[in-house]
Image (tube, rainbow, N blue to C red; front, side):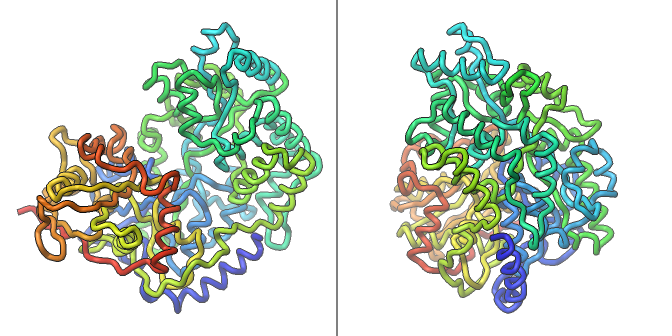
Length: 633
């Protein structure tokens, strides 16, 4: 229940002062305003996608600022948890999953940005949805992602099926494809965001009505003493339309378990005509597969009732602590101005298709949006309602509608009951009590928190060496009780875990791949927070110039690695971060990649592996000094 969580948050803040003696400051600056004569600014990114072009662009644009970039989590609960530990919020924070409802507990810790120059660059209508009752605006929306119905136009043309322009034509197209043995519409129903977006998407005219808008304002403004449930005018219609939508798209038993890869693969292969996804993915598929992939709206009864579903790529806020130092505040405001400029937003988008909320920012329209441009021009843009509880409850209720457990009426009743008394089971269950805390600040020999995490994984799965590549640690490890959710937050999201047997010489080549600048200039690190995190071995590098490193020595227990010996090795990270051209553009050598097993545990996510490891170790283990950085000779 939200009221219970608020009281618990305050209690935890009081308790944290006595619990956190072993945990360093997590804001990346060790409490100092300057470092080596430079202003230190910490920025937490909701996902590693923001590391594509934005972080190197900022470092190049502001050479006199010492940045710390951390991959955080896409939820307000993550930042509330920092406060509950008694830690400071970083200087600049981002989050994609956002609602004013969720953000209330953070308000006193964030700057009011309503009177800043950067706020003046926005269209007022987009800022108003973030304005608090007091008039303050603490969150600024970054350019909008378009997430609606994606269609394989080539498939429509091949079978002479017209692209739909309203809901009845959408159903007719599905039926026509089904008769051909092609799935008309499918999506990755397993995820909460797919359930949330299809549920809201199929009923946008109702949600954007006067009654729907008023209900949303009430919900976003609720307090501990006034919880807002579903109304009895708009939301019964939403569930009636969703029940019809699920029937019309021919949901089948087991579809609720479908995930991203099989759904998109079927779409790419012409086995599915339409899926729910983004304009960015649609453009990528057109480019990579040669398909004419386009974005269609969520359909209403007539074309005038069609809407495009959008959401900001992220929301950006600034810690109120920044106001205590005028020089730092000035620097942060300059960073915000840069990030929300046309060049900055293009760096955030990194080539993907987005729409801008700012007056003088012109981001070219996506080819995928050519059949939706009229809805963009007419401002038929719906911004999804995306509180933490709405995400979770949409999945729970949506899945039960898919399996037939709920009809529209019982779904409405269950949804209403849950949002007025929501409990996240992963946030309630206590797993263990951590004895010692470790900071995630990058120190002289790396991040103690990242080292502790990798040592825990290696010990639990009994490997000789473990290497974490791409950003792997999102937070400090604190001393005190850990819930399942808090334990999962230590490891960054969307990693894979691999295992293989490698000779010492091959281990050395892997580390060279992870550290050295390549002949074509591609760089797998470019700032220290991206240094590989090793367990079971230590390594030394030379920093030849800022953000460029060369591997020197690798040791185990103080002795040089034996090139001829064979070691079991655990690899934790995301290949796309290092390999994709929009990130580091450093593909792993094929002969080394071929020796990996696909996953440590079949069908397990990296966070599930973290949960399994902690079930064995009962603690995040003691860190080790895994890296030494030498200055250029």
